[in-house]
Amino acid sequence: MKFALLLIVLTVLVVLLPLLPAFREWWRPTDVTPLPIDETDALEPPYLARRFAGLLEPALAQQQIALGGVPLMHLPANAVHAPWPLNAQEVRSDRTRRIWHTDGDCVLPERLHCLAEMSARGALRTASGRTYRALLSGAQLTLAPHTRVIRWAHARSLSIGDHCQLPARVSADQALVLGREVRFSLLHAPAIRFAGQVPLEATLPPDGRWSIGVCEGVLWDAASRTGRAPRALQVAPLRHWRGDLVGDSHVALGEGCEAEGSVRAGGSLSLGAGCRVHGGLVAAGEVYLAAGTEVRASIVSQTLVVLGAGCVVGVPGAHATVRAPRVEIGKGVVVHGKVWSGQHLRSVGGLRDEDLDPMDPAGLGAAVRWNAVSGRGLASGDLRVPPQRRWRGDLVCQGDLELGPRCHVHGSLKAFGDLGLGPGVRVEGSVVAQGDVLIGAGSQVAGSVLSETAVVLGPGCTIGTPERHATVSAPRVEVALGVVVHGTVWAGASGDAVGALQIDHDVELDELLPELPHLPSLPGRAAA
Image (cartoon, rainbow, N blue to C red; front, side):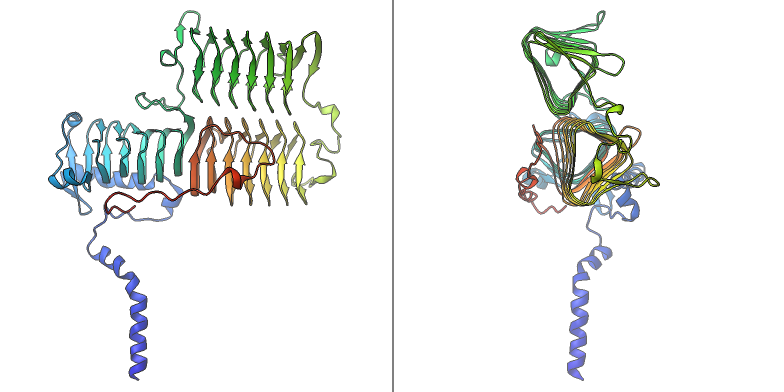
């Protein structure tokens, strides 16, 4: 009998001892503002930030000195330039565990790790190399390089500097712009732009797209709407401007730039992946177009024109000309008009409807069985789609699926293996795969991109639309320069915003994405 009673007591202890810390926290809270978590938390990325703001406002109105058992410091709007009233322990340890709020703009102190919530009604800027628990701004939130946020960050617009580490929820009401080599877990905003070069001192536009001007060495004439660059010009990714751009020397546009006008260069002219130029291109030197670039008018060079895979020149009904002594054309290029290389004149274009089999408008042959009722195609094995194919309906592949450059799918794609999109591909639906998903340069996916292993977004591609927000989700997500995501990027294990990244066919993703080291431990005794 005693043995049975002892066994019951030991069993109860084994069951209850793990719950002792939770009981102590419930009986005497020590955490900063206990936040109830329900299904809304999983469906709304800024839930934690909005819940904290809902608790903070009544506390400020009632002039409380603590919130959830944590001291609350309320600073007036004019205190932004005054020294912070830090106590002796905070000065000695370079860290604070108090909640701080200011009614105006705020620049967080240097050499201070903030291990409780930081809030500002106006703009908020962090210090470089510091760790923060949570950040809330009513205007623009600027994360200086090497900043780390461990729980959440929310603002109207958010600018993230280079080498930041964000194992947290990061969200913005308008736009979110990232620099280079940023590690993230969850990003959410109407427009997420992987710009690479983020001017931390500048105010973020509502859509997150900066123009070019004096800072880049371009002088604009308002009357003629022409910008002139007297020296060599290197435009950062995702810049946007209206008017013609004239460079007296070499001109290079970064990934995802959009020019509503023509571009001229006295030297060479290069366009990064996914660039869009509404006018023409003229250069005394070579003209290089990276994969997935679109130019709506003629291209003229005195030496050489190189068109990368999946590029488009001209528009239907307004033919353009590509003219140079030498022209090199990549796979899947479409030219609406003429290509003139030296003294040879020839016409280049995409596949015409009359060139395809009426019984197989997609040109995929017997490899795909189409259901006339559902409009869905099924491939029983691996499938490689040639360039410039287009079809309506969803396509399901029971093996690996690869689409060639400049394909256009009026539907969704699903693969039971790996799924790769070549440069300049357009998908009107979603892209789902059990294996790796690789989105080529300049491609556009209107729906979500989901993978059970990894997603790689090539330079200059776009996911979602301003009217239709989408989700990019996978255990590992790697994003190149010039990428725009309208919605959410959720990396379950690791997410990286990298520098230049070119995706080729037959690439091994395990070699492209090495195992990432664990994040360094937090300073002091702070916990996420």
